[in-house]
Length: 98
Image (cartoon, rainbow, N blue to C red):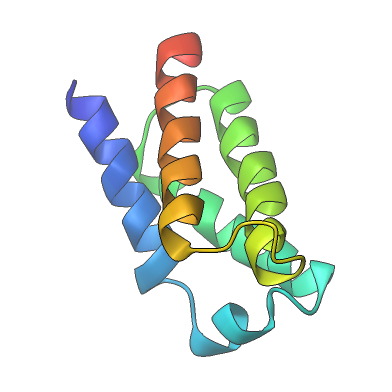
């Protein structure tokens, strides 16, 4: 159970504390910038969580897909929905890959 709290902490650090204003304002304009954000986000998990390569990949690729659905395409309307989706991915990964 400690791991799930670690994963959620990594999520908030990677998605908020390590996301610069530039990345936040421009990730919806460019796939390249979104890629950099997803790498930065995932690196938090690599540094602070001992999980499988498959789980790291799930975290990276889901973030690469979910963020543009809000920032670029407007399919996801609120930050709450965006955050819930990221947390759901972590819970799914926890149950399938740990």
